Length: 445
Image (cartoon, rainbow, N blue to C red; front, side):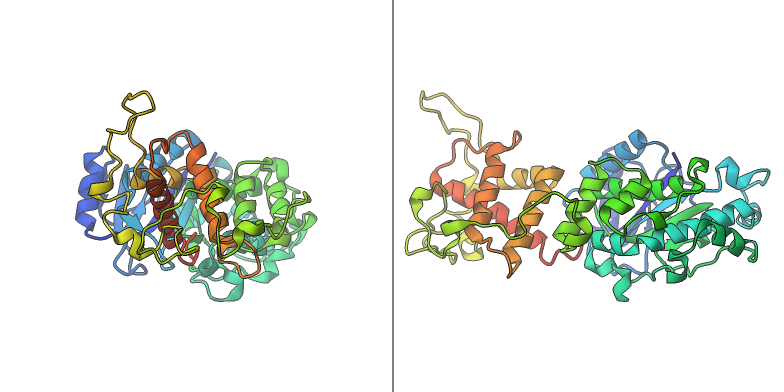
């Protein structure tokens, strides 16, 4: 596996500052400093300025080797920073893959110096790699655009980075060899989805298309995707391998890269489906395109249908004159109705039918933290909010309440036993309101 470097562009939340975040990370055992850096020299995480991110900065990892180390570092960082950082459309997520340290790339050249790296990138083998990587990426650009956030789709000419020239997408292996024999090195504008200027600076290929994130699953999956692009392009076993023999779909991309049926492929398919790219994501298995929710989706609801909801008199989300869904701002701002307020902590004095003390139900903030860090349920909620907001799909407020209620009941780390009916409705409603705000426009997901 190639060595990997990770860059995360982020912004602080609320009263958190650069200094307080640095102090917090060092206190919890994650050494980090504020400085400019050289990729091969840093030994720990670094925080550095980034003029492209208003009021934000960039977190940069040391060179990481092997999936276990990468996952450990990413897990520690994202867990420690929970609730302290945010991302928006200004923020990006860049992945560096260390190329010139490979023997086939450096041969007898000292790539520890900038002059040595300048020599290495002019070698035939590195030029072929660079041209093939551009071809492979450009060929599947429409698929990659289906996976990323709308603000990062380069084919609509609205993204910060530029796409690779379409001329690369149709090149054969033979035409690439002819092409590199006539040039001194493969060049591409720095602010493209792939950056080769970093080969001279650090000996790395930089992938720049992906949206900002502090989500561990996304960081790991983007890293795996970039690393596999490089590995499949350079591996001698696949010297004659060409994307031109594969369809421009999710399965075409992941078959070309050699991924299995699940894992990263399933994650990418889910994102493409959520983003509306049904044709690219179709795996041939039948699936309903428009969920049917039945009579439960009507504006009125019968209390006998099994949903436990709030009945706060000030709730603006009325279902009928006496029952409510419990996640409007007016309702949640009332102290007596807010399960996350100091007066409604669901005290540990709740007892079972035999009078024994029961564990307190999970608080709203704890439940949100659990759901944001459980990939499968996080995706379920995200996809359901996409449906809820779609004008073409019959999936309403009650359907969304049903789904979150069921998730909380089934999750092993969320305790719902002991709620009174009004409290349970407020609990589910507060979680829904958080995710409705979290996925405000799905721009950065």
